[in-house]
Length: 128
Image (cartoon, rainbow, N blue to C red; front, side):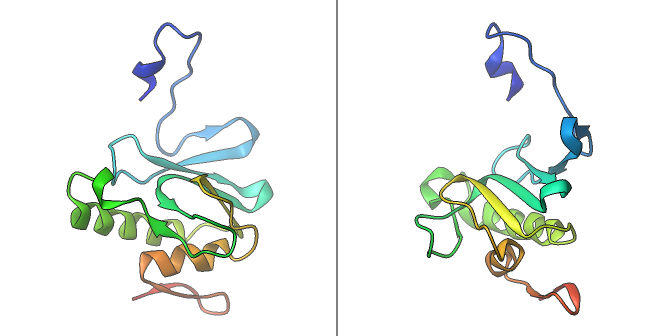
């Protein structure tokens, strides 16, 4: 997606696995688009998810983006579930979303529910 910023000023590209300033680590999601990522911010126990997970209001559960925004909804959702399950290995409590209010507490549990995996803080991650 960085090509979309051509002519708008300096852009520093990054790759999956890179550590960005502030200790932010880039993780691959790659379900809706090939450059889709999640950003892990260990210092703040936070995970930033791009377009795959949305939430309408503070008390609502996480949902996938609408099917109309996906080329192949079932395949895309399967890819998102797999990517989100991998992200549960990270240490985070807060889940920051591009679309909708953040999950300030219980973000890992909310993401596990969307991914369709069981997660228990005492047992660790994850099983289906």
